[in-house]
Length: 286
Length: 157
Image (cartoon, rainbow over all chains, first blue to last red; front, side, top):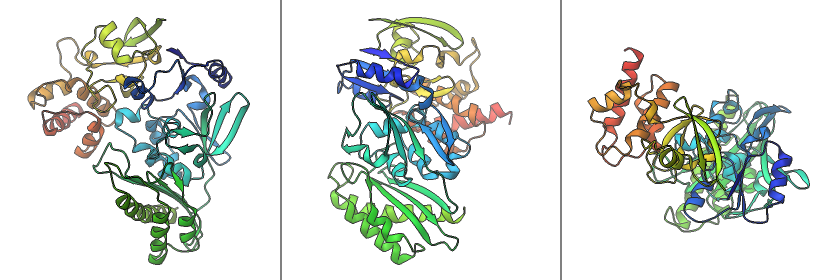
């Protein structure tokens, strides 16, 4: 195995393009190294992207935020403004693993690891985040929800990689939340995760909404029907009931040791309601 | 092909030749013979291999050795000053916060990192911060008490 740590996007793309064997991107390594050590994969080339400045910065851009793919969970939490504007995105990323894992784990890695249960992804999808992908043909932008196409399957080529995320500017009275259900209080994989992003008018009526669910389908889902159920309402009981039903209807989960199909579906409805309420309360106070 | 790496451990410059797929933990233990840092699960779940890299608490089993090139690493070996134990080490003895001891270096390194950031943590904050350090002997209570007591002593309370 060869280890390379290029300092520019072009150098990284060049390395990836010229390697014909198995090539892997290294950001925080908290999934990659586990897969290497458990003999799931034996890469010929590992490209560490942390030497590329674009992957390691959080910058304000067009009123929103550009977040490098290799920014760690701990760095997201420590940013002075990000948690105020996008508390849901940050709390999703911060739920991944222990303090030690937070010191290394990144949203770029969480996305490209390709798990349907990735905790940072529903929050990003709800936020309307896009990713910048670098490759041999240059850079391209795509919505976060289009990156995973199945468990461990990405719409990103082997000679491409995610450079950064973009979170759009926040209007007034807008906020987000992410909640997940796990069988213990810390350090586990989501049975269900829900991300909700809301914009309200001055009277508290929802004018825009995005609802995303994790761990209930082969990829994280953007559930437009769930958003439609609450847009135009003040999140009253009737709207919450419709949101619950729409979230459940979108689920296509599997049975596994963490939960049955019926259980996951039911919990998805409950979590969608709770997360929407949290996002709503946050948006009202802004 | 072996790769040459150079970094600081507990303030001292070190060099090693390593394979690209070796971890920082492998280099610490097998090349530098610093065996205070323990290997538990090797998958980032147990925290026995905790060290800090440029001041950030990480699992050394989940970091490739070449990534450590040019970095400042601190390990359990840097905690006591000669024969003088760090207050956390002293309180772990007083509270009997260890039995078999394999998790202890990782717990101590993690607890020190917490107290550097937050000298006055609540019990809940201690428990969450140390959630990635598994101990199969103590039931955690004595560990948490020792950390709280060491924090109080270090604050001069």
